[in-house]
Image (tube, rainbow, N blue to C red; front, side, top):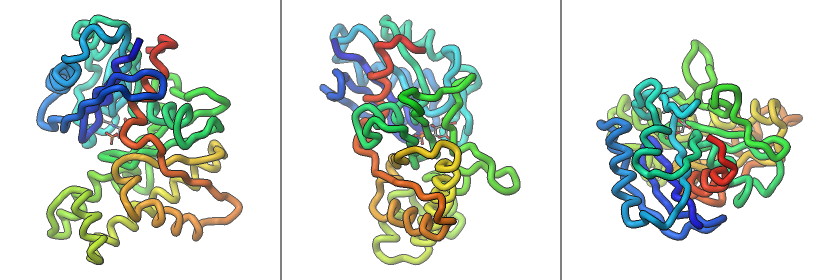
Length: 281
Ligand code: BMX
């Protein structure tokens, strides 16, 4: 039977009914950024309300860290999740089926590895989105780590202890645009760059340069066959070419093969559904 798959991100919430690599139905809504986990789960319950009785298990993948059934923010700027929210308990009481939980980018990495651009070889996945998330599949295994935070590449520290994502994410682009007297979120900045506005081009190029350095470093750590880039911003026109351009200026001995995520916005729900039958939590 299908799996109810839920993906709660910093910008949107996606609920889907998934069978294998097929999304049978899906619903999406903007994440209420002024709300909290109880509100987001209420949004999810409403999206999935019509599918009651058609699934026997669920998979829940979320921005932030998941460990022992508790959910916490790694970077509250991406989404303000309180420390150790009892996600497993709340999901069990709402949906009353066994649940598998994990971080959103880890699930997307598994989805791309199984069904998408990862192509069944060692795969590193990066999502360039509200925040910057990641996941690594090594020797056919999704690395989650001791406390579930493996793959949180956006949290790597750069100079002066700044988080990498705070110099490159969609949130950063929007904030930086504001500091330059411009308004709008990342999509408006991309639109401005497409119109040839220099300030917008500079911001996107700066973000892409940080991501190129990250790819270089990830190649040294994992030496994967492919680094798959996803996320609304990662897939936006012009982003990946800028990353490629910057990569060419870095030491050539380390070269990465980049690929666009093939599953788009469905990577997380497909990945968590594929993890669910194995009963991991
Ligand atoms: C942040 C972190 C990661 C997440 C990534 C992408 C939080 C709330 N989130 O690094 O767990 O995977 O953002 O998240 O600390 P997205 O919401 O942009 O998809």
